[in-house]
Image (cartoon, rainbow, N blue to C red; front, side):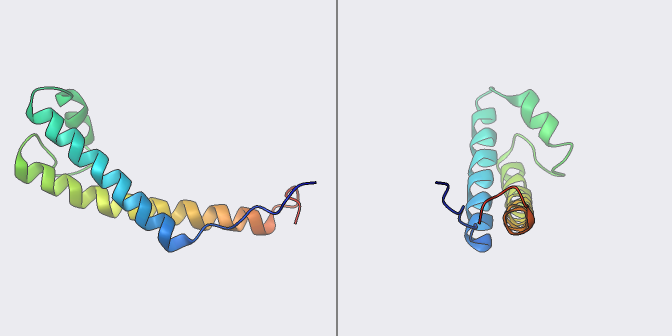
Length: 92
C-alpha cells in the first residue's frame, strides 16, 4: 500500500538550497586560494561575474551562489509540488 508523498515546503527548500550552494562555492574558493581547483573556479567564473581566486572574488561568488541557489531551489520545489499535484501516476 503506497503512502502519499509529502509536498516540499517551498521557502524552506529554497533557503536550504541557498545555504548549501553558497557554502559549496565559498569552500571551492577557499580551496582555490591554496592552488587547488583553480580551473574549476575559472570555469564557474564564466557564469558568476566577479568570482575569482581572491577574497573579494569569493565574496562576489557567494552573492551569486546565494541568488542562484535560492532561485533554482524555488523553481525545483514549485515544480516538484506541481508534479505531485497533477501527475495521474502518483497515487493520492
